[in-house]
Amino acid sequence: MNAIITMILKRLGLGFVTLLVVSIVIFSAVELLPGDLAQEILGQSATPETVAAFRAELGLDQPAATRYFTWLGQILTGDFGHSLANGRSIADLLSIRLGNTLFLAAYAAAIAVPLSLLLGILTALYRNSLFDRAANVITLSSISLPEFFVAYILILFFSIKLQYFPSLANIYPDTPFGERLHRTLLPVLTLSLVVVAHMMRMTRAAIINVLASPYVEMAQLKGVSPWRVIVFHALPNALAPIINVIALNLAYLIVGVVVVEVVFVYPGLGQLLVDSVSKRDITVVQAVSLIFAGTFILLNLIADVLSIVTNPRLLNPR
Amino acid sequence: MHLLSRYLPASLRSAPASALFGIFVICLYLLVVVLAPVIAPYSETEILGAAYEPWSSTYWLGTDSLGRDMLSRIIYGARNTVGVALMATVLAFLLGGFMGLLAATVGGLVDQLLSRTVDVLLAIPSLIFALLILTIVGTSATSLILVIAVLDSTKVFRLARSVAQTVVVMDYVEAARLRGEGMWYLIRREILPNVSAPLIAEFGLRFCFVFLFISTLSFLGLGAQPPSADWGSMVRDNATLIAFGDITPLLPAGAIALLTIAINFVVDWKLHAASGLHD
Image (cartoon, rainbow over the protein chains, first blue to last red):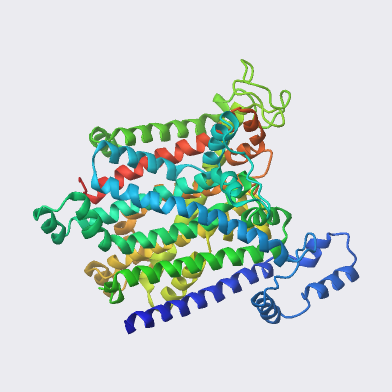
C-alpha cells in the first residue's frame, strides 16, 4: 500500500510541476506578442505619454519575472486581474460561467459514461454480430463528425421541426434545476455523442483484449455464462485502460464544450474564451486558458492514479 | 506505377464496402479540389444576387448571407479547407517526424530536452493553446497553418520517436555508426525507411484531426479570413437559416463530415489489415 501512496505523491508532484510550467507558457504568451501590448490596445493614435501611463497601469514597466510572480500570486488568491476590453474583474466574469461549464460537462458525463460502458460490454459480448458491426460503423462516423454539424442537426430536428427543446441553451442563475436539464439537453447530447463513441470503442477493445487470456477460457470451459465471464472475469482486468480513457474523455469534455457553448449560446467559459480571442482580450484568454489547462492536467492525473490503483501491476513497469 | 496497378486491384477486392466507399469519396474530393474552377458555376467571391436566395435553377443551392452562390463556394471551399489542412499536416509530419527521429538517434540531452518540451505542450489542450496563440499572432491562413502544424507535430514526434527507438538499436544502424556515417545519413538511409510505414498509417488519422480542428477554428471565426470560402466559416455565416428549417448551412458541415468519415473508414481497414486481426 505504501508503494501506491508514494506513487500518488510522485504523480501529484509531477502534475504540480507541469501546471507550473504551463502557467509560465501561458504567461509568456504575452511576451511573444509582436510589438507592445499597451500600444496594441490603445491603437496607433495614442500619444507616447498615454502609452507609458497605461504600461505602468498594466505593470508592463517591470521585468517579466516580477510580473509573472505577481500574476501567479494574485491568481492563487483568486484575483485574475481585469479584462482589457471592458475593465471588468475577470474573477466576476468567471465565477458563474465556470459553474455553468462544469454543470454542462458533468451532465454530459452522467449520460455518456454509463451508456458507453454498457454499449462497450454489449458489443464485446456480441462481437462480430450485426449489432457490433453497425455499432462500429456508427461510432466511427460519429467520431468523424465536426461537433457543430451534430449540434445543428440536433437543433434542426429537435428544436425547429419537432420543437421539443429550445435551440438556445440560455440559462440564468435562478433557472430551476429541472428547467436547466431540459434546456441543456441538446448541447449535452452533442457532447455525449463524440465521447460515447471513443469510450465505447476503448471498452470493447479492452475487454476483447482480456478475453484472449487463459483464465477467461477457463471460465468459459467451466460453463460460466458469457455475460458473467465478461462482467466478473474480463471487466475487472480491463478496468485500467477503460478508466484511463474515461478520464481522458472527461478532460476532452471540458475542452469540447467550447464549440457546443458557441453553437447553443450557452453562458459558459468556452464562449467567454472565443469572444475574448476575437476581441484579443489577452488577460481573459490567459485566465480561461489556465483554468482549462489546469482541469485538463488534473483529469489526466486522476486517470493515471486511478489506472494504477485498479491495476497495481502497473507500479512495476515490464 | 507498375507496382501500383498490380497491387491495387487485389487488395481492393478484399476491402470491405466501407473502405471502398471511403476510397471513392476521397477520389471524388480530390477531383473537386483539382477541378474547382471548371466545375463551379460562378466565382467564389462575386456577389450575384440577394442574400439567402432559396434553391433555384440559377443558384442550385441558393445564395449565402452576402448573396454569393452557395454551390460555387462549397466547391472552392474544398480547395481552401482541404488544402490548408493538408499543408498543416504535411508540415507537422516534417517537423515532428524529423524531431522525433533526431531525438531517437542522438538520444541523451537532446532527447530529454525535446521530449520534455513536447510533454508540456501536450499538457495544454490543443484547442485552448491554439486559441491562446491566435489571440497573439492574429488570424490569417499562414498563422493558422503554422500554429496547427507546430501543435500537431508534438503527436507526430511521440510516434516517430517511439518507433525510431526500436530501430536505432538494430545491428545495421550500429554497423553504419561504426562505419563512421554521419547523423543525417543514419536518419535518412537507415532509420527513415524502417519507420515510414507506421508514420504513413498515422498520416490519415492526423489529417482527419487537423481537418476537423481547422474547421472548428474557422467555425469559431478564427480561421481563414473572408472573402475566401471555407466550410467551417460558411456554416457559421449562414447558421441563421437553420432556424427556418433550411438545411443549406449544413451542407458544408456535411462535406467536412463526409471526408473525415471516408478517411476513417480507409484507415480503419488499413489498421485492421496491418494488425493481422481477423476476429
